[in-house]
Amino acid sequence: MFGVFHPPGGERARGCAVLLLNPFGQEAIRSHRIFRVLAERLARQGFPVLRFDYYATGDSDGECERGTLAGWCGDLRTAHAELLARSGCRHAAWVGLRLGASLGLLAAQADAAPRTLLLWDPVIDGGAYLDELRLAHMTFLAEDFGLDWPTFAARFGRPRDGVVDEALGFPLPLGLRAELRALDLAAAPVHAGRVHVVATADGTAQRRLRERLATAAPSLDWQALATASPWNSDAAMSAAIVPADVLQHIAATLETLP
Image (cartoon, rainbow, N blue to C red):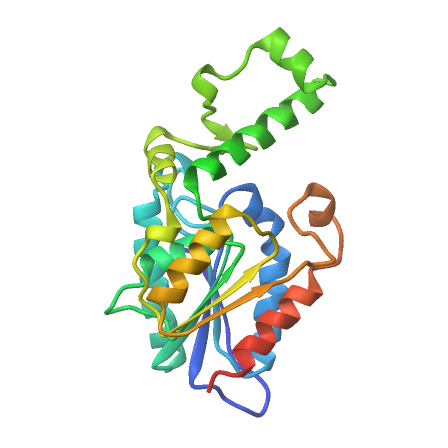
């Protein structure tokens, strides 16, 4: 796996390291600048920080079709162990965005649990997430052909059974689709001393997850945050700005760690 380690700077050395967990596919590309800015900021605050690419993603080995949720959870635990060994810290906080946040909750186990798990807009309902990916992919194709969606669907046909095997240039093999379809984060076990959620949307899935975490997590902090800088778009990816309000919130939350 490929990773980038940010050694701590500043006058105060922290006893807790930070592991950043990428989202999937196009969202990983769109959040690359965000995670780099966040990593550099946290390093200046004295945190050792590790960014990494799961197997079969980014600059890590493996063909894109080989990625699985189960494998990526194992990669996450490997990165956690590497960060602790490299930094000399005994504990780590995990900060995940979208599917990376979901993987963080799924990967946390009793023998590899983060002190703090910060989830930024986690993917809660895997089936709904697949539907989002399908719609985004088909909308892109329609726009690329210069057609509106009804005209595109009438000319080229709709995906059989509502399924596409690609999401904006990233393969969605059958096994990964099955894992995502079965994903229900609100039913997942919780192994973390402190769970912090940053939610920029509110709906049934978010309420189910909040209720679950309120009963299963030793400590829960749920923050609804309407960011002024949406990051998940091609336009945002090409801009120099990042959602500074969310990053400020994350940095302030981690600032309370030893």
